Length: 115
Image (cartoon, rainbow, N blue to C red; front, side):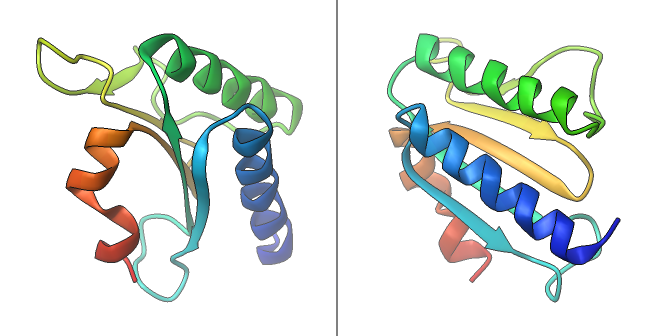
């Protein structure tokens, strides 16, 4: 896939998350830092229902742009039994979307980890 097209799609997903009220949407360009993905797109969800909605929006975008979601077996959610929806992951190979609770985002600090 064309590098410019990948960057444009990652940016579009970041804007889409912002349009749907995700907090602090960020796009991290990881092309020079690792071999497993090119972009992380990160957004903060305000609740489990908001995370569900953001994940649906990302899935629709992927379908409309013919992006394959790598893990189709079941949704990937991370967290404790008390807070099961702390972190959603949508893996499209070259673009990985992280939808996180504020608590998870501040704990894992992905932007800092990958800067």
